[in-house]
Image 1: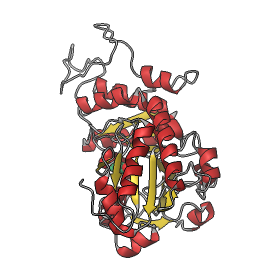
Image 2: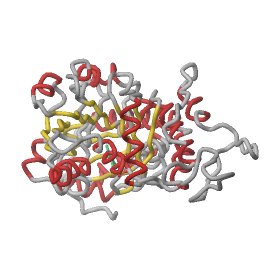
Image 3: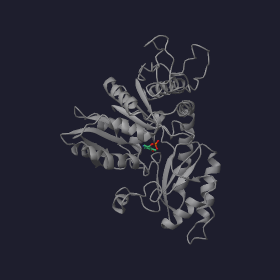
Image 4: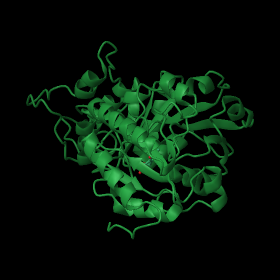
Length: 401
Ligand SMILES: *Cc1c(COP(=O)(O)O)cnc(C)c1O
């Protein structure tokens, strides 16, 4: 059976009901209520060519199929293909292109996507132009006759710039596929397919799996011809998740709504706390009324998510002292897990960018990114308050990491 079956996305059911039940019927043979981990490479056939829908686990596996149907249902999509990482999913979406095609992309897309587009696809004569997608008109103005893919990421990393998915998709020229990397928002907060996107990509490593214990990705669409080509690529190239990874993702995604509400609540509290400090010079969070695109965020998202970035007064030296000085926020890259993380984008996640590119994206060396977890709000704020106080300029020595 191809792994692109209808999810039966159960329009009458709400988000968490779909998260817990879509694609997850009880096992017909044993009655197992929870989808088992089908740790098998192959499936025995009753007679030559007669299968129960599965013959080889690269092509399709019941545990993977369950998470594909679950995630399709969460995005309001009919089809999903799961991959072994977010980057494998991005590469899956890029497989829709051919030599000679052109990509338009949000300027501040994920670094790995930037690298795939510029360093790898360029060798296959696929060009990319980066645009400021905060401006829908400028976005399409950069289009070329051979533009086949528009790649959007909103909110962006790490400065949380937004683009108006519906406003851009509305003017989509024929022959262009609009793709949205929805990793930062998650399907709970933002539904790009309903806003007019043709496909959605996730690094399920982040909010969807939600516990920082698995790497994965997914491509979701309502377009059967796109779905067929992605599923073909998935089987052909074989960058599929193992069954335990599929299982952990399926399990994590059941609580996505609960977690996203808690992430958004805590991040709002943290952003408001930082905005009140006189030793913080800038706070980026779409939930603050001072965010330049706050109105768009309210319209396009049902909450503002768990990522906050900020610039403490005192420059890069103090920022690094803060990053190394928190006790709950752990100094680490990645995001979207239940635990709070802090990082210095200029050196940790975006270290390979040129000084000019960093300046263009407003990633100064004093910028810090928080992935606000679901611990107690009071504890997170106390941790930040203590660390900010301990590092007030002039530096009173660096707190131990
Ligand atoms: C992490 C991430 C990716 C890449 O996903 P991996 O699972 O690390 O391969 C792509 N896009 C965004 C926005 C991400 O945060």
